[in-house]
Length: 322
Image (cartoon, rainbow, N blue to C red; front, side, top):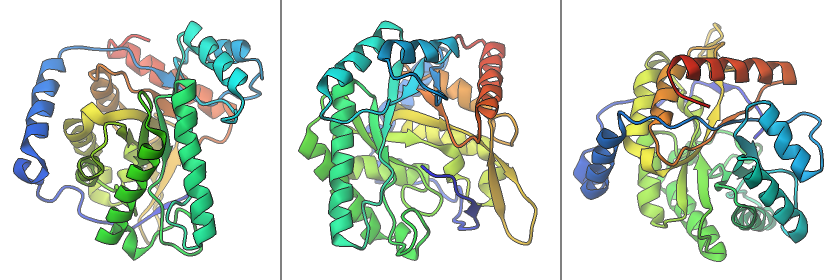
């Protein structure tokens, strides 16, 4: 997804937490028990990121990830119809212990133009089919936007019941068209479109009501106001407390507050901002499914290298193995 600035589209970060009964108490009870049971367990972090000047050969590409101590990868460039190449990539990555974290399909499923919306829907559906075929953990897109000029831009109806209902319907149709047995379909969190909070993400999981619907965790995308910026530790814990069993993949970046006459958070590499990565890595390491942590939105290989080294070093200090 293309990089963009986050402006003040601010809802209350924490407010009153929805009651267990309102969200479905059995699921919350299971999640609470699971969280307590796994609190003392640690699983290694599967870090990943883009490969610059990536080789075309699947074997060499998998090895390029391992040379950087990456255990996860973005899906390589391959079309759904390239069956032989899909199989070669899948085998090479499995051989070298690199999981394919996600197939990104960054288009607007709620485009106002009916033809574009139809094409986008097919593109995302094919993305989920590719994820299933190649062994990726998920296919991810944003839920969309009603903004007429920006495919991801803000719009007042992006947090409305109409948007929620459309997001649920789209997810069900995409999943039902593919019927994946291992890959999940996810919506990335956004600061000005649903899911814009742990509670709205959980509501989507329950409303979509498909085993193949998962959660894509991008905590920086949820930080859209000062309260969430200052208490991002609380936000992170809320995400893992409420969404842990459904988290499939995560994005890694960081935020700084650029001081001007309005709220402006700027993305930077992990370790150069204010996100509590000690909490993020610790909570992530407690999830037995080991969702990958994927670096993104950095300008060059040097920044990715610095971010990679920082996170691996921090994980080592926390006693979380690679």
